[in-house]
Image 1 (tube, rainbow, N blue to C red):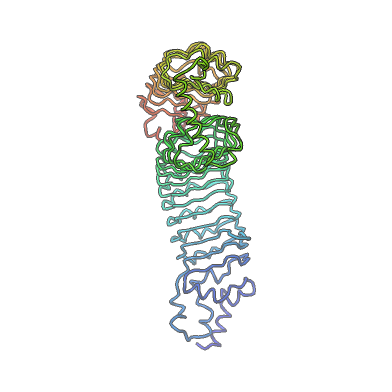
Image 2 (spheres, rainbow, N blue to C red):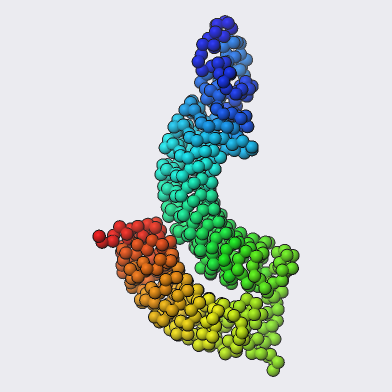
Length: 608
């Protein structure tokens, strides 16, 4: 065929690059030619409003020069060209993609992400995208997508899927077909829920769903046993399912900027390195939250409502960064100064009257040095107290009067004491004590003089003693918010305890209760009841339903022979733990699916 005939033929072809030049933005011929050889084409930052037809047909149409010249060197043989396997369309002004995308079946990477000044404006995806069966990476972030075609879930070879910064309101159940997916980013959309089929993504390593409107995380997410990073920051989460603890490979967990009231308990997350829960509403941090975080190197608790740190923080021997900025902490365990790897301790915005601001401003190392010096001072003070002189007040040898005066904390724990001496309470004269810690002693009864503190006290810890009953003095502490009675010999609580109408948390684990304390049904403010490892045989679901603020109920390892179906109507429960009881239903498989599944199971069995 002559050059002239080839030219005429080229002019007749409706899809030719020749004809489209007038309407399509120019794509340099050299770029197309190179792409035919390399299999890669980068058209980013070209202000394209549509993809030139010559790009979609690069694997189909012979190059233009083939109609002009039949003399080719070995390197110019267009019939030996490489199929396009990588197409980058970043930072343009594309509003749609042609169905002709199906003409690129060898595509491995389709990248539409916004990196620089210009993003794209895609409002939909072509159904033909489902035919790119070899696609391994799809990035369509920073567009205007409101929904996704069902055909997208046919791309079962996908390893990475980036959907962030769109306008998606839902993700279809079909996403569960992408079983080889390792990275998934759906952040910065309008999602109010995510499908339970995400639990089928057993290969997923990284899951980002930050900046949405999620109120809960489905329990099935716990099936992601390979997941290493989960980011659910900037949502509306009020709780985290306990099943999250089943994600045994988890290394980084981000829950910033939510509405969490409690730190999640993660007993099986032995490899967790970073836990970020800043900007929530967490008021309490206990040993149960920290005892399983031995591998944590970063613990971020900034901008919460914490009032204290438990001594169990000292078990985090690998801790490198601890952020407590903007809480209500008035004192610190001086043992923090001895954490061997701690390099960053952030305390700004706390009412730490025991540590001068100039010490905090000098940085972490000076602060840790100061905390270590206080340990030495206390040790020296204890040595001196062993040889008390007539000039030494008895109370000074028994309690830390400095902490009492500055932190409003009465600390008389771990003394193996059978009574609390009057001198301890004498030292509190005129001090508005808010917290009393009498744990880890041998007390058989509550000190009667504790009622003298009823005008200010909000937190009482009597755990790990020998209490067999609770005296009425405790029932006079009407401002009490937290009550810890774990690991005692208690079999009942007095009905008068219902006078504690401010009580939010009660811990009764490891006692001898055979009946659920009736008084607790009459405290409407209660949010957390931990009564595991007792002998409780039944619960009154109808009375529990009246506790509309109850979010956590731990009944593990008791003697429940049946679970009343009406318990399923306690819709505010976020954590219901029933393992270790002798009932036959719900079965263990249902319990393993988590609180929401258990409640649904129970609701379905309520007699009509």
